[in-house]
View 1 (cartoon, helix red, strand yellow):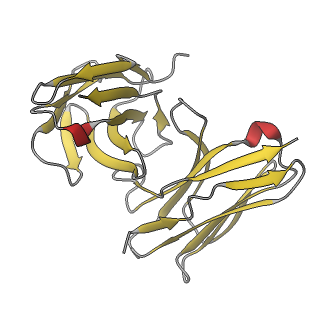
View 2: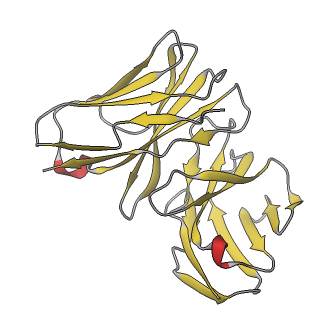
Length: 111
Length: 111
């Protein structure tokens, strides 16, 4: 079993839809949870960062962490074609050091 | 402010050769992380350098090595290249436990 499981998709939604991206994990030591966005031929870009259970909102993005279920989610409201990218969840016991990534979900938002 | 820069952008080597990849962190960042992003495998943690010292290492053989220079730039060396070493190698930098920012990566192809 992988430490971090993420459905690779691909996921295709119409513009304006609410997108839900999810990861599960098995290591209870993970304390820091991140979501990265990676456009084609680019490096990953940090979107959201949290270290506690609950919700964190930033504009159209909401990150949700449920440590009891070992489950994290990223919601994108009013999705735009510019959101089309691969979304990677990442987690670490020590913040940045030895981050474990999910396989990434490829998202396409169609106009 | 310049982001994390990596060189070269692309590198083609033959099996058995050595490859050297370079990373310049964001000015002021003291930590550098190296990741391998192979097709279908997601990002795998390779190495973490901080203040010139190797702080942690992922599950990779010893032929993957590196160093961090006094100016905090870093080098990743891969000896005795194998075909499966073909991947995108990503460098990230951070200041302490703050957010990590990724470079664009070096695409290594082993033929």
